[in-house]
Length: 147
Image 1: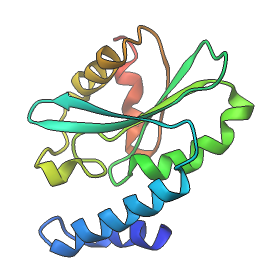
Image 2 (image 1 turned 120 degrees about the horizontal axis):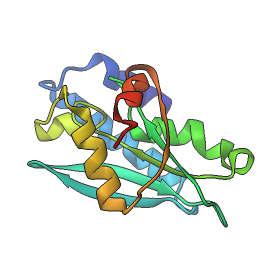
Image 3 (image 1 turned 60 degrees about the vertical axis):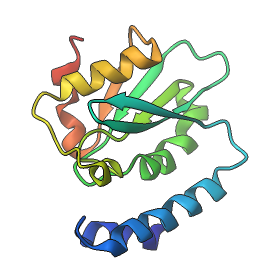
């Protein structure tokens, strides 16, 4: 899975091998996590479908919204956060927004008003309050904290 993910960083979206590498990466991810409690979501935003994954934790009362960086993929962040869940004891919600992960395959790129993306995610999941963490570029998540 790591090798496919690494190749995605170097391939341009105009290179047909990028889509193939992503599909291989996704197949490996799905195979590894097939017997887990991951809940996959597809959230309509403008002309695209934003992929998201919810990772519920039994009896959790809080949700951690994980906002990835410019070149991140939701799946790689699942690899980081899933093992931490038993220590943190929160639900996790991760997603790829415009310009992230597989979303550019749908011709939707970064937007300066990212709070609209986060609002769409929260509205879809009916979450009124979340804690948020930003990874790399996602560190700008505090700008959406007032939503």
